[in-house]
Length: 137
Image (cartoon, rainbow, N blue to C red; front, side, top):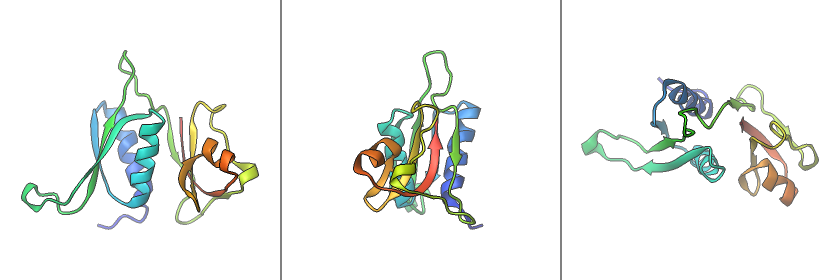
């Protein structure tokens, strides 16, 4: 079965893995998800993300991303919320002077710009707008 929104599917897999208490989750690979996982690792929302190459011998028929989830010392998940904003049916674009802040900058908004995928703080510094992909807190 094909997925109509692979980004929302990957974010839901990460959200569900946190709720189930898993330490790792495997999501489908695409360039945008690879960039989002890298941003989540840079912002310390996850421990790491690793691209698993295609390996038919181990029944990996296409590229995947292995995400190592991060928890606090008492077992609480670092990510409290993960929400997809721009959807295939309704794209949401923001200008450089209207970039959102998530929970008084304790979270981050992930923006897909012409300069690449970046968080809202970097987009404010570079004064670029783009598609408001998701927000994390």
